[in-house]
Image 1 (cartoon, rainbow, N blue to C red):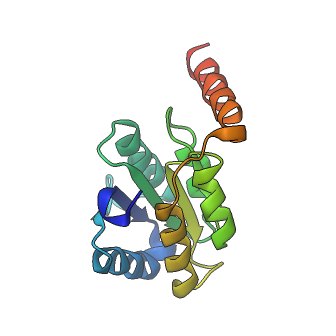
Image 2: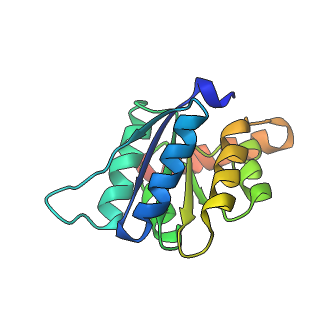
Length: 155
């Protein structure tokens, strides 16, 4: 998938506002259709509410992919994965970001502003957005994850 052919939503909690601004600027420079959701909720929204809101946007197909940022990226991944149809993973290196999409078909990337710097974050985002699901040996695993997800949500 070309960086220019994807609609991306991004959001963060207070720990990652600076990094979010850097990533938004970078994506715009690359010609990516990026939307900063800047979710506020009923006031000072915490990361669970922010992450859930973005994940709902992915589930409802308003965006192709989402990026969530917090201190470690871990909490954001946990809450995003609570939304049916959303597959999120935390990446702090380029190889994992590629595999997140190529092997696992994830539609949400999470990162931690207290774990990585801005230049590495840009490289991770680019690697993930430049990657497409490859199927092959990963296809049955992803199908099984989706089947287990349906079982979890629908009994």
